[in-house]
Length: 92
Image 1 (tube, one colour):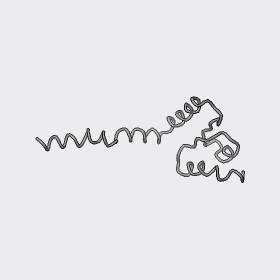
Image 2 (tube, rainbow, N blue to C red):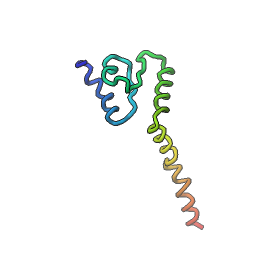
Image 3 (cartoon, rainbow, N blue to C red):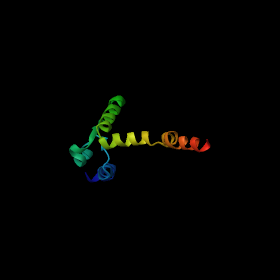
Image 4 (cartoon, rainbow, N blue to C red):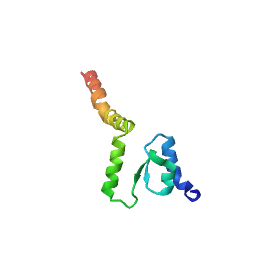
C-alpha cells in the first residue's frame, strides 16, 4: 500500500473529522477503511452511485441535523421569522 498512501489521506482525514467516508472501491481504500466506509464502483452508473451516496447521507443523523439546521436557521428564514416582525413593530 506504500504507493497509495497519499491517495488515502482524504479517507483518513474524513474519518478523523467524523465525516461519512464514501470512497472508490479499490483495494488500498478497502484495506484502510475496512467496514467503516461506503464504497462506490469507480466505473459504476452515475445514478446508482448518486443513490448510494444519498442513502449513506440520509442514514447519518449528524448529516440530517446539519441539513435541518441550515434550512431552519438560514439568514432569510431568520430575517423573515424574527427580524422583519421586530422592524415592522418598531415602525408602527
